[in-house]
Amino acid sequence: MDYTSDGDSELEAYGSDTYALLLSGDIKVMHDGSSYKCPFCSVGNGDYNIHELLQHALSVGAAHDQEAKQKVDHRALAKHLKDEPAKSHSPLLRPIIMDPQPPQHKRDELFVWPWMGIIVNMPSEYVGKSANRLKEHFSCFHPVKAHHVYSKGFPTGNAIVEFGKDFGGFRNARIFENQFEKNGYGKMGWQEKERRGSEPFGWIARADDYNAPGAIGDFLKKNGDLKTVDGVENEEKNKNEKLVASLSSKVIEKNMHLEALECEYQERTVSLQRMMEQREHQLQSYSQELQKMRQCSVEHTQKIVDENKKLRFDLQSMTHELDARSKELDELAAQTDCDRRKLELEKQRNATKSNHLMLAEMEYQKANENVRKLLEQQQVSPCCANTFSSCFVFDDTSFKDVYPVYKLQKEKETALNNAKKLEEQFHVKHNLQLEIKHLTGKLEVIKLTPGNETSETGKRIAELTEELQDKIDEMEYTENYNQGLILQEKKAAVELQEARKFVLDALQDLGGQTSDKAHIGIRMMGELDSKAFLNVCRKYFPNDDAEVGSVEICSKWQNEIKNPEWRPFNGKELEFSLLKEASQREPGLQQSPSRQ
Image 1 (spheres, helix red, strand yellow):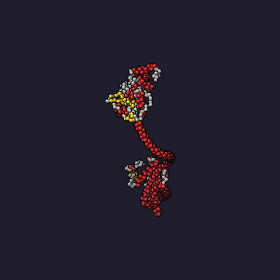
Image 2 (image 1 turned 90 degrees about the vertical axis):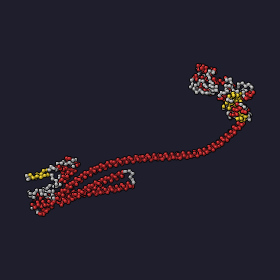
Image 3 (image 1 turned 45 degrees about the vertical axis):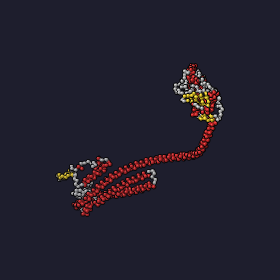
Image 4 (image 1 turned 120 degrees about the vertical axis):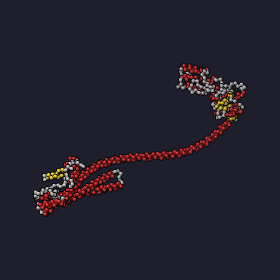
């Protein structure tokens, strides 16, 4: 091998120096006489045998990632290890295989089994050293183990090399023996030579060695047996036959098991195929059902959206309708309040008329007598006196409100009855209107509510419709009845005006026939003028409440006038005249027209 491949003369000289140091022994390779070490490596430098150290030196010398000096040193070490066995003076370190073919032997010859080789007269450098070194030296014969032979704890200079139990080991042992016999260092040479020198001898252990006394015989007896080649061959054959039989039975068993597995595999395959077909069918069905469900979901969602839109539109319509109905109800409530006020005003007016009629009845008797006396003074005939006494009412100073008594009495009763009936009919009409509004709204809500298509809902709608129709008919009847009452009231008012006109005309005719002693006139007795109160109340109240307030105040003062014990004026006689002064003790005369 060329160690100057780097092309550097300096490195080549350095490698030559390293090689010279190895040859001179200045650089030690031997570690403890049985193992080697690399003198150039400090990390991981353990015990090597010669072949391991050679392999290490070659690998580092050929590496591309090492320094140049390291590579040169290891190349020099590899060259030294290759040249060292050739320069050794001991024939033990130069095993040469001349003929690889084993020699012939007898079939019935006894050998020590496992096959063993005996080495005697070993060089002193191997005696007592590591047996691995001896094994490495004979590595070309592929030994299994190497043992030093000891006698009483001391090495005898002999060794035993094992070659295994098979025929390959027997072949290696025969080659080992042949190697020594070729050089004259076999068993016969050991027995014939008297002066054996320092050369080692070696041969295969046989029956005579096994039975010989000494340390070698003891070791062979302890670690081996005597067997012929045929015996070993027969044993191997028997073992092989048994092994073949066992393997055959196992093969048959395995074949049966394989057949069972094949049958099971076929069944599983068929079952799996069926399952795959079913799975495919189920997946297809599932996909179809899923598609249908998605389609149904989309349709249902669209339907819900449409229904929501419709419901939203219906709710908006109902909201607008309810707002309109609310406005109508507000207007109706306002109209109802106005009607209630008018009804109260009408009741107060009817009460005023009733008071007038009651006053007329109270003065009836006195008026008759006064008229009779007046007619007697005016020399009126008794027939005329009876007529006028039945038609007019007078007092001691002037004529009071003169009415036909029989007519006024009748009109009073009629007016009271009409007022009561009007009030009742107004309440009935108002309640009917509210019920009709309520039923109509309830019916519309039921009709507009979605999902109300059942028979019970239909019956309920029919019942509400029938009840609503009854209320409408009742309200129409009430309105017709009210119209009749209004017509009757108007007719009674006309008759009352005619009677009033008749009385006024009669009084005017009567006034032309009286003397200067009697002053006959017409004035309202016991009734206050509501217009004066209305004009004053308009200054203190809003327009809507002025009329109602005037009626209340007028009614209050009308009741005060009716009280006979109430005397707002104090009379004093002064120069044959009556002085009437307003009493300061009456606070009612001083107050303004405000609500109490």
